[in-house]
Image 1 (cartoon, one colour):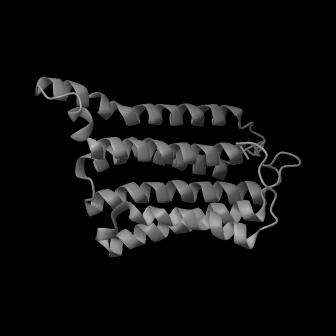
Image 2: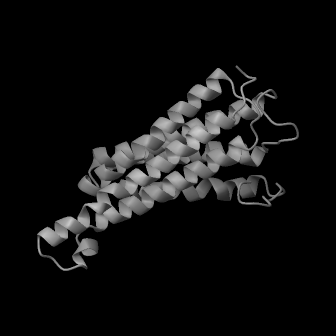
Length: 207
């Protein structure tokens, strides 16, 4: 299966991500009719639904970041294996789950189960990207000729997964941490720059 062109897989993946981004906003479309029915002021559509709005913005940023990482990696791919295909499907599953996890955050805010569900979904997503990166880096049949996945790239990818897993465990042990554990995501890029200071800088967004 390593001779399969990744184009259709990439198109399908991009379409699913686009749908997931669209689904994120659907709960917000119900806010205005509810305010109108309650004869409330227009500003109440914002002030009374801040949790939903912030969870939407956070999830939009998360999915966008996930897609950029995925897009960047698949620019290096010329073929895919069965393992890569299945890992990509699991990655898509986590993307599709994000609108549900986001609605849970909007409805239950800092409830521990909700926090764990939300962060856990992102952990699995990031773990899939790490597996995909290792697969492409370790198999020449999957990579385009001349493509290179640097040590810094791999370090940053796996480091992100480790940081997210740490955030999940932190919330599991100390429920009051809530979503602040996600701030650990700033650590891997900083450490990567310190460990690999001479790594070439990307010349375009997709790099």
